[in-house]
Figure 1 (cartoon, helix red, strand yellow):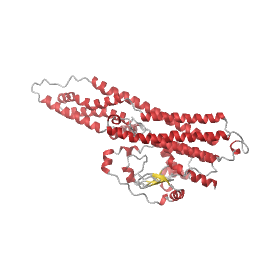
Figure 2 (cartoon, helix red, strand yellow; figure 1 turned 135 degrees about the horizontal axis):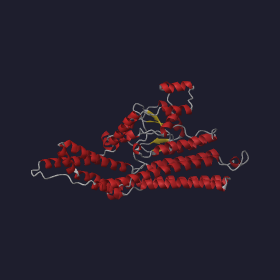
Figure 3 (cartoon, helix red, strand yellow; figure 1 turned 45 degrees about the vertical axis):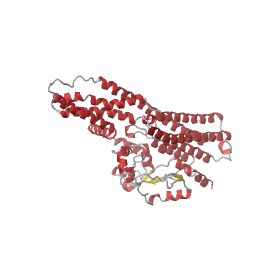
Figure 4 (cartoon, helix red, strand yellow; figure 1 turned 30 degrees about the horizontal axis):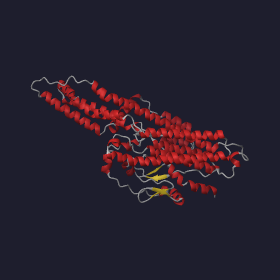
Length: 490
């Protein structure tokens, strides 16, 4: 997918490089009338094999706070408003109060019990079909059904009539499959909750650190505190802090959403180790940049404000914020790098596939007793589906940062590249209302055909709409930082 971001341009090999600010400004002025880029050539057969059910595309339809942000930045044109929205728009002359929107949103919540029950079962079935049925499920189903049919006719054609499928103990299935899967589910969800807490801590401390650099003072203007430090442009100082915090969030998002490198194939096969090595090299470079280089810059900015006159206790609190951010990043790295017990997962995977076919004589005996082969086959399919769906849920949540958001994965892109960015930039523009606004709204084009074919995109595009707007990423904001500084000083 081609993304057009401020301050970046794509070269012939698809990578991005800084772009001069005149081109950036011209691009921003002509986005509404520009022609979308040509469609990206992608092999449909490869995409079908990678994601035949388009689960990534369906997962992008999950609504979060980022969608509220986009709706606020890109309000629906007046001539396209729905009936109720148009009535309220006219009632308040285009300035609908937040309280009225809140009241309207609460009043439109579905509360009819019958409808909720029907929709609940329907959505549960869709999730089961689209996300929890995998190739492993089909293999297990094939083995179970095949063995059930084999034993059914074997029992039915037994001349002695003494062969029977009774006596199989279901305790073995519970011990070999259900127990390790239950433990893995619990461990995976605890890891996910831990990651959510650390993301919340990181964003909270980053926000407080930025506010401290912008607002904290040590004297009264116009002759004391920051106002007396004529050699430091405090708006520029705040923008430098903001640039580092946005870049840290962007690079942390890219680090966390890298492909997983700690599965069994990455340990036990040569091709898997090569794959892990390639990803690990990129991961190290991202982590080195966001944690070592960026935090050095933040510490130097804190030292600058200390030398200008800020008290030792306030600077100590800033350093504490930096330390807490570092702790959150380290904890997120641990969750990303290390997995749930490999022995439990390997044990569960093998027995989930191989054990259900061994119960085929039981299903065959049930078919003979009821004089219906279909009943036995249905039981064989249900057992295989249930066990493999549970295993698939565990496998998906192994790395919560790249898991499907529909299945409780963490929407890292929304947290860091949209909400984190918008919170910091909005605070900066509110604190310095007279300065040049930091970071306009970045636009880029994406066609609906590209959206359907791009299974790794974090964006949701409705077919038929060729132009989408998005908040700029941290690395894009850095390229225009110098130009804003020059325009402010001119």
